[in-house]
Length: 345
Image (cartoon, rainbow, N blue to C red; front, side, top):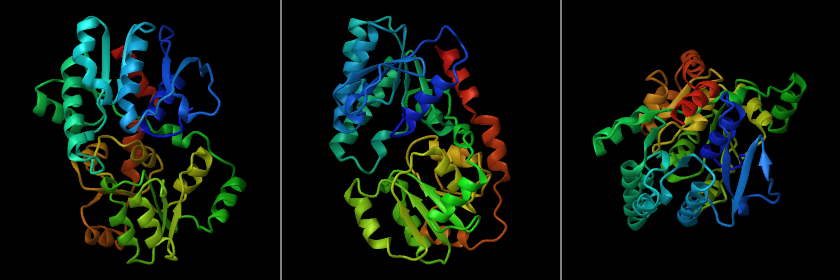
């Protein structure tokens, strides 16, 4: 089951929503992430590698997975570009194998990487675009970038988010969740993300520290020095509640369904899953002002670039999220996303 991030959620929902009986999935997994290693899950066959699927180990993880998949699959869907440095050699060995590559966001631009890692990721991205049979962009901003940077067309397929509203708890369960965190309905803001500098968590927290509005911020605070420093600085503010990652979909449903607004700080990448999920709840969304977020929300959200911008928005009256739900229901259902992937296969 998905337990980390956007790509895992993508795979789980592709399997959940498949409509073409000819499609059978084999999914390559990191054995280090699971204490119990299932052989099958939701009609997919699972294969395991004793490597982490992120960080430096994602490079050999992707390369070994790719070689293994070559012998058990007709079409290979690669998520991310870490192992694409190997593609020039792979194409010499397997020139006719069908590769679809979702290049994710512009990974080499993320602040967490040093200069050497950024150069490597840029090279891997270039190899992915050069050697893929089909390139998948999850956002219009990414699609435009691929065309401008490499002169190549890509397929625009975003993420779905309606899984976030499917498991609705009872009214009693809803009351219990709000009581657990001492929250009142429609009386707080929420943000859900990995705690990384490019997600502008520092700006969000500094802004709320200047207001009386309650903020519920869910993320992996203890994963890195940046997160631990923010936790130490803001955990004692009476209006700021810092929560560790919540994977229970019903608990997340309650916290999102009862919020007065959603704050989204991502500055890198394409269509972000947590943003798309939030859109289905129809609350006002305050996004960091970059082309990817504007594309995902079709210019209908509220945008900020600085602490001052965000504070001003937090103090504004009459913020509306009606269009967010309409856009989500039109563009970001998993049935639509899955159909697009199956057409590519």
